[in-house]
Amino acid sequence: MKKLHLLILFFIAMILPTELVHAQEKFSIERADACLQLAVEQIKVLADRSADGMLPKTFDKGKNFDSESGWWTSGFYPGTLLYLYEYSGEQSLLRMAKQKLLLLEKEKYNTTTHDLGFMLYCSFGNAMRITGDTAAYREILLKGAESLATRYSPITKAIRSWDFDNFPVIIDNMMNLEFLNSASRLSGDKRFADISVMHANTTMRNHYRRDYSCYHVVDYDPKTGNVIKKKTNQGAFDESAWARGQAWGLYGYTMMYRDTGDRKYLAFAKKIASYMLKHPNMPKDLITYWDYDAPDLPADSKYGKYADYRDASTASLTASALLELSTMVKGKLSRYYRETAEQILYNLSTDRYTAKHGTNGGFLLKHSVGSIPHNSEVDVPLTYADYYYVEALMRYKDYYHALK
Ligand code: GLY
Image (cartoon, rainbow, N blue to C red):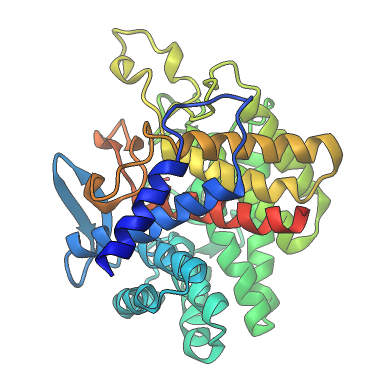
């Protein structure tokens, strides 16, 4: 068995590129397979290094950090295991995922966070889709969606993100709508989908600027629904374009078009993509800085020393969103989105971003940024960077086969 693993790793090392490449190089199905094979082996290292009863989060200065099930990233590790089980058919990955799902189940009662889509849909949603076992997961998903729906206000017409400030809504919250859409399909209860549409429309109106960049946070008056303040929490400054926020929005509106068929979401996703991909500060290799405005920060400013930090999590989730968007449009634009996603995946798969097997605490990608203003998880691997990278690789394989 050990010999077989060594052989697989040797094969992966031969296939994966070591240099960053730009437009002239092409991603390929062979490279996608090599990346996924490496991911299958690497996640076993992560499994060995993370504590029982906890969920992997990051790795820093030689140490792995895990979270309790109530932390917003808790669903990504089981979700990644499930994607890799789907890819490889290895039963041990499904077993490991199911152990972690046991820890997560109680979060279906959690009404103190908007992050239930990340926590429960990336995990249980994938489990139900991949195993086909609706009976095992239906009640958990619907209870979780009920909990998320308690945070919706018909006055603000939005789901409350955090329990401080007045009624703060962060752009990240667009990602939880997929969970509500799926709960409507599962239960036949239109209320979840209605909340999702209201939230998406309110966010479109209030989070976005004329250039289709978005604010991170909009704080509403819960009594009137009026906007009190637009600001940032994890970006460089209030008016900046925090990179992951732009990608949450791109992914969110692409998903909303898929789930509703409403073309205004497609048009909006295209505008967001255009803002991101044509931005003068987009680096040539398309692995974004942590904030689109970061490279312009004066060296002596508050975050000036972080001006050139990249965020691989934004890149992986952008690649995943662009692959989906490429299936929703035709011709040149479709090719542009697909080739851009391929270029991102290619560059993420080089030594600069992909860790060697056995290193990086068992995480796949290096160089992500959690929050520079909080000095938290800066230039480290992150569980959600790996999740969206693996998702993008799986999408690439699906679409590649569809294209042939
Ligand atoms: N949802 C929190 C983040 O994107 O960092």
